Each structure stands twice: as structure tokens, then as C-alpha cells.
Length: 251
Image (tube, rainbow, N blue to C red; front, side, top):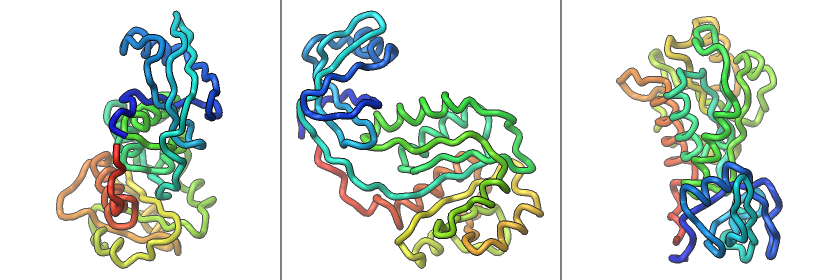
């Protein structure tokens, strides 16, 4: 559709024809004072469950706004299932990393604490806001789940047996990531694991290498920063096993 609205909002309410949707105060402010939309202006809505719907502005006031849903423009579709597991980096780069992981289609964003992790705590609500903004801008129909930081060992202890985990290592006897994905079974869920700036401790690497669901991959001859490594690994997965093999939708 060439006339689809350029503005997309994530909402939590159910979406259906003729439904009235009340937006959050910050969304009302954005529509009214930033975009300067008025009554009748078109807006695309999605909630991660019901696809994408066309709506129009009914009312925008101070801290409030309502829209009326008119027609579905895209049906909900199944997306690739790849988790990003990573040791958090400093704030500005962390915001960037979470935004790009959402753009690249990560289905879950799972920060973990390792022996060399520097960041002590996270503002999870800030990370979730970054995820929403990225999904709105990129046309995603879902939001990745964002978890609070937890110890890596705790996550591994609860790891689902059917989910393959690719450990991105800086050195050692590793398989190039392109080769690993090219020989992999394309079915089933995946995850990529990125370590902290100081790398994993030897005890962590020894434990990971002995887990049956873990494969170790290399990201080339250059030493990548943690946020760059995460983006590169997700891009490789999407290109070889994910939805980058699909043609882009007609917009």
C-alpha cells in the first residue's frame, strides 16, 4: 500500500475494526505536539498479536488521545526465533545495541552477568522503551521480550534443550560463523551469546564448551567490540537462517 501512514504506534489493547484505542500520555504528546496531527490523521497500530491496523485520530488533548481502528493492513506473521544473550555494555552503547537487536529481529534480549561484566544494574524499562521505538520504526509486528540481568550460570541451568546456542568467541579453535550456519539445521530456535568487554573467564568457557546445545563460532580476524559482535552475529543468522532470505513487503 503506497498510502499507508508513516506513523506507527505500539499499543497494548486488542485491535479490531471499529475499536476505540486510548493512547498513553506520552504517545498523545508525540502525535499532537511533535507530529502535529489532528482529527482524522491516519496512524498505523500494532500490538504484537493482531497484525497491523489502520486507525485515525479522534481526539488529542493534554495527556490524552483516542484513535478509531478502521481496517487491517497486515496480518500477524510468524517471525524467526533467535535470542540475543549478552553481557551488558555501558549505557549509550547499550541503548544502541538493544535498538539494533530489535531491528534485526531478535525475539528475546537477555542480559547476563558474567565474571567480567562491568555493568552492575540495568534500567529495564529504558531498554523496553528502546525496543518499542525500534519496532515502530522498522515495521516489526512483534516486540522482543526484554529480561532483567541475571547470572549466566542461572540462565544456562534453565536453558531449553531444543534451543541451539552459538557462543561467539574471540580466539581459539572456532568455526567461522558463516560456515557454522551454512551447515546447520535451519529448523528450531536459536540464540547467540556475546561476552563482556574483557571476555569470558576460562572457567566459563570450559563450562560452555561442554554443554551439548552450545556451538562455538568465530567472527573473523578482527577483535570486535561487544555491541558490534552482537549485531554481526544476528545479521549472519538472519542472512543464512532467518528472514533475510525473504523479499521485503510491498509498502
